[in-house]
Length: 491
Image (cartoon, rainbow, N blue to C red; front, side, top):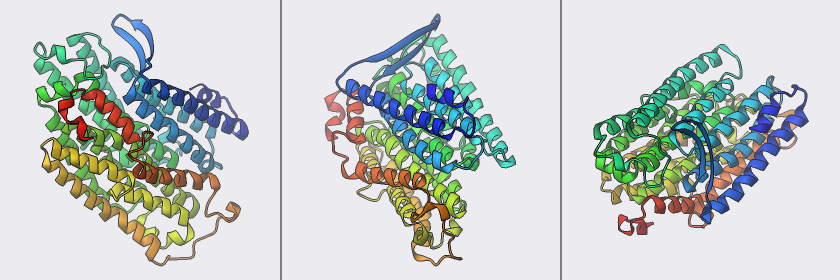
């Protein structure tokens, strides 16, 4: 947050100072988080509490689940910062952009580390306000229209969430997020109210999570610059909504309480409808970023599906997809940005033969696309395999059919892009990028997607490593399902 606020004060021509502040902030944050991860793994508790008013404390608390999201945001923020520095090299308003960019990721970190619903809502609304200037950064009529739609959706959802949080505090009093759930003691006294509150909060969070039919803002927001699109889909807004639903189920209600209230099945069905609808919509898109937007709507719903199905294996599959989808999707948006920035390619129909001109970019895109489809041994395969196994273990074979249909649809809209790029002749000779030297594009645009594509491979090949996201998620789920009879041994 501090370097971001300092960046606002810089002149446009202070490039070195702005770059130094960006990278210093990202690297310092990553170092602090690395220290926290080791502490949390050893059982150390990190908590900060500021009483603001009676019954409402600002609480930041680091446990295993928050640290998963914090690490994701910190790592991808550093990579996206490098990419954005190159992408916006000749653009106006860079100090404004990087200032709000830093505030946005700071808000995401606050969301991740929130220790109660009140703190979560504060950072959740800060994220909405900080992201709006990024969406409208270009200042075109289309960008301003997208910004209005974005605010209309997210502020409406945020208002509904605030009302629900106040209502819940009125019903059960103040409480903190608790592993295993904080509300089980109120089951008998407030049965009906808690069921209504659950669905109001899921719908409110579902706006940012882009659950159908609350997803309309996301494809429109693709007019934003590629670094913003990458941030929206992989780290910030969409993930904030999905993460909020994860915490609602596991740390507010608790998985046992959700089962007793009969809420999980409805959540899984809503996610399944979103998965299939968005995949079908992606099939009909010609604009590359718009197709990727519908893909995000579908893929993020996998997280909600795993949470709704319940059971340790399904939970592992859903939560680990929060990380895997983020890395795969940021790879795809980096590559789409490279095509647009270097060659002016914005549509799938324009990608004929583009792999001959930009082989590294298209190799990274192909890895990200195959990961999204679920091809082994990539990260997406790990998520889908675990989700499918969890669906069967939880007695929901219909969810396995949803996953299979979704993977087939993923292949139907990703493989034609890859085929065009590698096996069709270009419509015209591709222009060379004069100042990129021998590289296909600027180094700061090329390195980030290559790094994230390698991460997609590594998270699949070394999924059983103790340093993998899968192993960390298994640790989280072990705490959610402490009962050895619950099936955690199947992990």
